[in-house]
Image 1 (cartoon, rainbow, N blue to C red):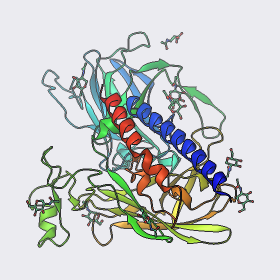
Image 2: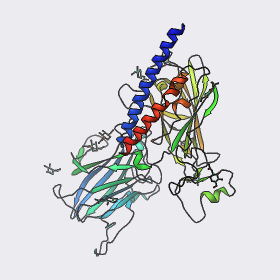
Image 3: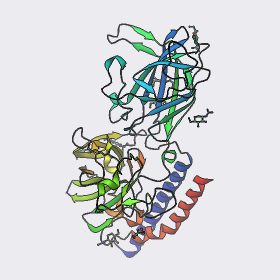
Image 4: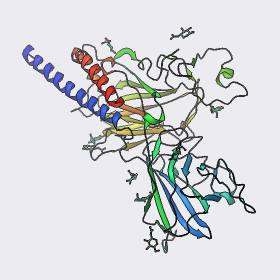
Length: 458
Ligand SMILES: *[C@@H]1O[C@H](CO)[C@@H](O)[C@H](O)[C@H]1NC(C)=O
Ligand SMILES: *[C@@H]1O[C@H](CO)[C@@H](O)[C@H](O)[C@H]1NC(C)=O
Ligand SMILES: *[C@@H]1O[C@H](CO)[C@@H](O)[C@H](O)[C@H]1NC(C)=O
Ligand SMILES: *[C@@H]1O[C@H](CO)[C@@H](O)[C@H](O)[C@H]1NC(C)=O
Ligand SMILES: *[C@@H]1O[C@H](CO)[C@@H](O)[C@H](O)[C@H]1NC(C)=O
Ligand SMILES: *[C@@H]1O[C@H](CO)[C@@H](O)[C@H](O)[C@H]1NC(C)=O
Ligand SMILES: *[C@@H]1O[C@H](CO)[C@@H](O)[C@H](O)[C@H]1NC(C)=O
Ligand SMILES: *[C@@H]1O[C@H](CO)[C@@H](O)[C@H](O)[C@H]1NC(C)=O
Ligand SMILES: *[C@@H]1O[C@H](CO)[C@@H](O)[C@H](O)[C@H]1NC(C)=O
């Protein structure tokens, strides 16, 4: 190659990299300003449907069903809590498959005492093992709802509610207001209940159709920003062609010894004497996260190691490590965006499903554990990790080890975005000439990041 032509190549690379970075940063700032929008799951929502199945002398009986239509965000133990405010003076006479957490003041009732008299009831699922006469279909899983891609059969949760002091026709019933869904913490925002066409139920033998007397729907969407202000997960990288291990960015999820917020900045060294009593102080059940001391302070780290290079394939090892002493992650899942997911040849010891958030886009995959083998990510400690290897087939027109191509573009753990190392820190091939180009872009990136920050906080 002549010197002049290589110069041309470099400046073309420069322009393309700049354009890509600008596009990326612009999309970042759009993402932060439209909080409840998830680019990898644009239609993700939890739909709550109330089907009135019977009128009673003073109200109605309804079956309430929650559908988790999110591809990869599930509700894990200790499960969901559904709340609302009654429009009139309704009471809950009884429930099946769930219960109100607080009965409230039922003192004006003589004889039959309602299950709950609160104006703003909070309802939780019953636990597994509930007697059959208190169950209905899809209930009693301790409020755990799987995600749609991972297990659609278990992505639904239902209960039955008998409401009194309510309307008794579809003209007089008032829909509940101010619906809240906690899963179990904040993060979901629910819209108003909308009366929709009554649901039709088809009998098991498909020979008869019945329909609800009245139906309303509520849609709830998730926002990571509402759920917690700080990230919960970070990504580290390494490769066979470079000895450097690029660790998670320092302070990705918090800083050690920071006093900005109560509780944050506290961590435990694994060699602390009497570790167990520090983690769960006797006589006190504490659910605040307690992480192992690291420079990133994240409860979860995902490590992506480019392991081997074959003639037609290349191989990656992925390790997920739990640094939280107070959390076991059951039914964990991970979403990874990488261009080579259009041709994943084999995945070892994880389950895999390709996600196509948009027509023709197939660079995104969801990974989760094998049931009874590694679907349970144990609390921090020697067992607190799961790992897998991925074998990709090379597409010679796109495959390269240069410019960090072999590393993921984006990773989510349990639906929350993980903090990636800055692009200029990625391990690079010895003598990779594209290096200085990216370093030159750093000041520009910093400028844009601060603009994106301003954007999000106006
Ligand atoms: C909720 O998700 C379902 C299934 O993906 C979709 O059909 C529906 O349109 C979504 N609702 C809203 C309001 O986005
Ligand atoms: C109420 O029921 C009547 C007759 O059954 C029906 O015509 C009407 O559309 C229903 N209204 C609503 C809001 O469902
Ligand atoms: C809605 O519910 C939340 C939490 O239960 C409560 O703080 C808020 O005041 C309620 N808003 C209305 C209008 O009832
Ligand atoms: C209400 O929810 C049900 C169940 O997901 C869905 O089939 C129906 O399309 C929804 N209706 C509207 C208007 O969103
Ligand atoms: C945090 O504080 C402890 C005790 O105050 C100190 O020993 C430790 O070096 C500090 N760590 C960092 C990262 O500043
Ligand atoms: C995690 O699971 C293990 C084994 O089931 C259990 O001993 C431990 O108490 C659990 N830890 C937490 C924080 O729930
Ligand atoms: C994926 O790899 C298979 C062989 O493993 C090949 O036949 C196919 O064309 C590849 N598909 C794409 C989209 O690259
Ligand atoms: C992925 O998308 C590309 C381009 O849209 C298409 O050619 C390819 O067949 C898709 N691969 C798979 C595995 O669906
Ligand atoms: C490996 O990558 C790092 C950047 O992460 C770089 O500083 C180092 O020079 C690279 N090593 C070699 C041998 O190129």
